[in-house]
Length: 95
Image (cartoon, rainbow, N blue to C red; front, side, top):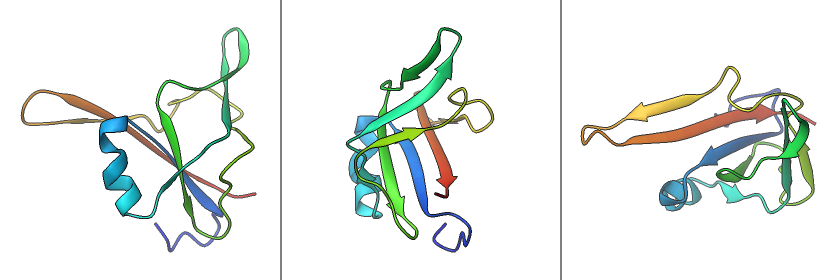
Protein backbone atom coordinates (compact mmCIF):
# COMPACT_ATOMS: atom_id res chain seq x y z
CA UNK A 1 0.00 0.00 0.00
CA UNK A 2 2.93 2.37 0.53
CA UNK A 3 3.42 2.29 -3.25
CA UNK A 4 0.10 4.09 -3.85
CA UNK A 5 1.58 7.12 -5.64
CA UNK A 6 -1.60 9.17 -5.81
CA UNK A 7 -2.70 8.77 -2.17
CA UNK A 8 -1.56 10.98 0.70
CA UNK A 9 -2.73 8.64 3.44
CA UNK A 10 -4.67 5.50 4.15
CA UNK A 11 -7.76 5.50 6.36
CA UNK A 12 -8.63 2.30 8.16
CA UNK A 13 -11.59 1.43 10.34
CA UNK A 14 -11.10 -1.58 12.57
CA UNK A 15 -12.43 -3.11 15.73
CA UNK A 16 -10.48 -2.34 18.92
CA UNK A 17 -9.33 -5.95 19.24
CA UNK A 18 -7.29 -5.53 16.02
CA UNK A 19 -5.74 -2.16 16.93
CA UNK A 20 -2.42 -3.55 18.19
CA UNK A 21 -1.84 -5.38 14.91
CA UNK A 22 -2.41 -2.28 12.78
CA UNK A 23 -0.39 -0.06 15.12
CA UNK A 24 2.53 -2.49 14.76
CA UNK A 25 2.24 -1.99 10.98
CA UNK A 26 2.51 1.81 11.25
CA UNK A 27 -1.16 2.84 11.47
CA UNK A 28 -1.94 5.59 14.01
CA UNK A 29 -5.28 6.33 15.61
CA UNK A 30 -7.03 9.37 14.13
CA UNK A 31 -8.13 11.67 16.97
CA UNK A 32 -10.46 13.87 14.92
CA UNK A 33 -13.94 13.43 13.48
CA UNK A 34 -14.88 11.30 10.49
CA UNK A 35 -18.07 12.44 8.77
CA UNK A 36 -20.30 10.25 6.59
CA UNK A 37 -23.62 10.71 4.84
CA UNK A 38 -26.65 8.94 6.27
CA UNK A 39 -30.32 9.22 5.29
CA UNK A 40 -30.75 11.95 7.95
CA UNK A 41 -27.76 13.91 6.59
CA UNK A 42 -24.06 14.24 7.41
CA UNK A 43 -23.14 12.69 10.77
CA UNK A 44 -20.04 11.81 12.80
CA UNK A 45 -19.03 8.18 12.22
CA UNK A 46 -18.03 6.61 15.53
CA UNK A 47 -19.06 2.97 15.16
CA UNK A 48 -15.46 1.72 15.10
CA UNK A 49 -12.08 3.42 15.51
CA UNK A 50 -10.39 5.25 12.61
CA UNK A 51 -6.66 4.87 11.94
CA UNK A 52 -4.43 6.66 9.42
CA UNK A 53 -1.31 5.49 7.60
CA UNK A 54 1.10 8.17 6.39
CA UNK A 55 1.77 7.72 2.66
CA UNK A 56 2.82 11.34 2.19
CA UNK A 57 1.07 13.39 4.82
CA UNK A 58 -1.50 11.90 7.18
CA UNK A 59 -3.71 13.97 9.45
CA UNK A 60 -3.88 12.96 13.11
CA UNK A 61 -6.63 15.42 14.10
CA UNK A 62 -9.24 17.56 12.39
CA UNK A 63 -12.10 16.41 10.19
CA UNK A 64 -12.19 13.82 7.41
CA UNK A 65 -15.42 13.92 5.40
CA UNK A 66 -15.95 10.76 3.36
CA UNK A 67 -18.62 12.59 1.32
CA UNK A 68 -20.84 9.54 1.13
CA UNK A 69 -22.21 6.49 2.82
CA UNK A 70 -19.83 4.36 4.90
CA UNK A 71 -19.09 0.90 3.49
CA UNK A 72 -20.80 1.74 0.20
CA UNK A 73 -18.38 -0.14 -2.04
CA UNK A 74 -15.49 -1.10 0.17
CA UNK A 75 -17.10 -3.04 2.97
CA UNK A 76 -15.09 -6.10 3.86
CA UNK A 77 -15.97 -8.77 6.35
CA UNK A 78 -13.56 -11.56 6.96
CA UNK A 79 -14.82 -14.89 8.19
CA UNK A 80 -12.71 -16.83 10.67
CA UNK A 81 -12.50 -20.54 11.25
CA UNK A 82 -14.15 -20.16 14.66
CA UNK A 83 -17.22 -18.61 13.03
CA UNK A 84 -16.55 -15.12 14.37
CA UNK A 85 -16.59 -12.29 11.89
CA UNK A 86 -14.40 -9.19 11.81
CA UNK A 87 -14.96 -5.90 10.05
CA UNK A 88 -12.14 -3.99 8.37
CA UNK A 89 -12.27 -1.17 5.86
CA UNK A 90 -9.36 0.60 4.18
CA UNK A 91 -9.58 3.81 2.12
CA UNK A 92 -6.77 5.55 0.21
CA UNK A 93 -7.21 9.32 0.22
CA UNK A 94 -5.45 12.30 -1.25
CA UNK A 95 -5.71 15.89 -0.15
